[in-house]
Every structure is written in structure tokens, then in C-alpha cells.
Image (cartoon, rainbow, N blue to C red; front, side, top):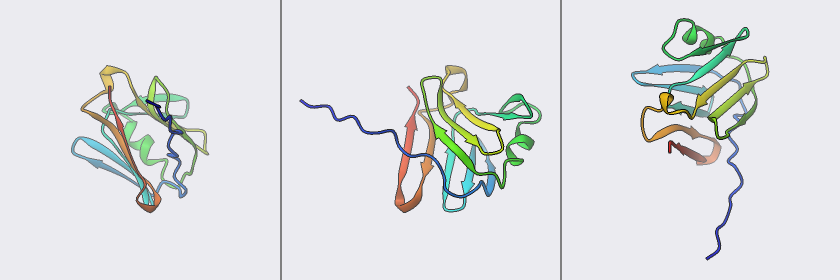
Length: 121
């Protein structure tokens, strides 16, 4: 049996962040026709501080990224998703159990019906 290793998915939106939607128990980051639904608790860096979802300043820091483009998007063992914005700020979806809120960490709806669903382990 041959195991095929697929390249990591391209999670970098083309357009700048255009909307941040706070739904009952998750967040949507909209980049025009592309977007993320974030189901785990998230973090954002703002002016050198790391702010965690649910704490004062998190929502304002996230909304302040509207109009900014993503320079790089990736994931690793510690973070299910990292979005590095061109203004130097970052958005993270930690993989640590304290941040997990269900079976899925996030969903990415890309161009041309491209869909990525990242599972929690």
C-alpha cells in the first residue's frame, strides 16, 4: 500500500480582510469571496500584545485588521492556523487542548469551491 503525502493546502487569501463576523460561538474572517470560520478559541497580536478570544481588547484588535492583507498563512504542531498580516500583526488558532471547542478547528472556503476543514485531534 502506498501512502500519498499531499502538499499543505494554500490557505492564503488573495484579498484583504473585509469583514469580521462574531457568530454565537465562532468567528468568521471574510476576505471578499474567501473566508475562514474559526471554531477553536483564537488569539491575535496587537501592538506587541497577544490577546485571547473572550478577553478585553480581542474583538477590537481583530476588527482593526480589516483592510489588511495576509502576507503568509500556515499551520504547525502548536497552531492549527497562523495568519501573518502585512502590517506585522498575526492571528492564531492554537492547537492546545484549552483552546479546542469541538471536532473542527477551522474551515477555509477558498476560490473555485476550494474547501479545507482542519480537524482537532
